[in-house]
Length: 59
Image (cartoon, helix red, strand yellow):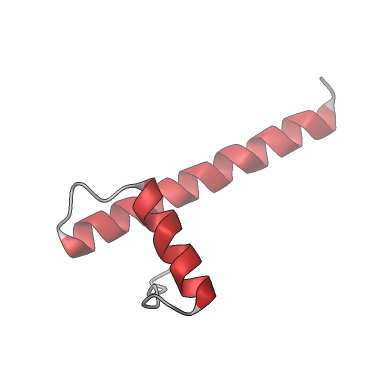
């Protein structure tokens, strides 16, 4: 393992952490404890295809 592997691992970990924060924020706003990563990804793809509602950017 070299330094670039360490940096890439840290970036992936940080992205996962921020994604988890976003999902948790949506859960709290909607009052939906069943909402998870799969729901988030589905909404993102629906949004990208223009068929879904827009996710609000609260950051």
